[in-house]
Image 1 (cartoon, rainbow, N blue to C red):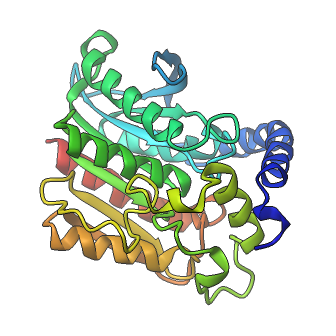
Image 2: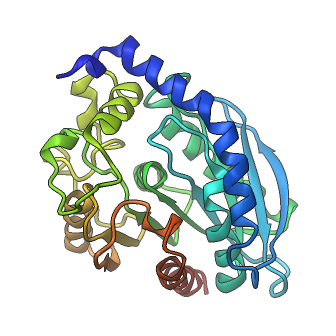
Length: 304
């Protein structure tokens, strides 16, 4: 373990990363305005009450269609420590248009201000609220899907697991896009064929140690559903679309979870994105468009 394994040091690095985010997000927002211009987007803000902490969210509405369309709840990436709804703006605009769904892009709680299990509990409380109050806000909460990229995919998997264990709300599809699904294995022990990988071991060490400082807690089913200690029968869990970039350091755990879901009869599709690394869609817009179209099609099919 390096010095980044020391709780206060990893937290300090995470806070420094958070402090640098606002300037980067403004640049990303400018770039995103030029991405997928055919999807203009009808976007409004909302604050969702939750006992852990209120959550701000951006609501993307389809241009036309049903009076009360289905709803897709999106959780952004950022290593469990960085807030970054802006990263997913092109994705949300695309899904709203092509899936015909209202997309709620959630700014969930992050560490070290809110360590595990707070973000997973808050995310589930947000989904419960969205399911219960949909008609008041113009969507059908009974036809709901969840998903996320990177850390957001982990959060989405945790939401689906809680809904499964607690008997609802019903989730028609969970979309897990290059998600970390086994924190019991350190990043340096996760192979990658990428010449210049996006996820560096030091980054993952900061993220993991800030989010779940106790190594024993990383085996929790809401953190590591692809870990060896989680052997529960998942028959009946929300159907899943799992997407794993071929060169991603997290590829193997995503593929392993896909096989587990398949054994439970819950795998809709496992998409392996060839010659692509973690967060490939932020730079390769053509590839992003292809994969986002797959996600939109699966959301539409799940909520028909």
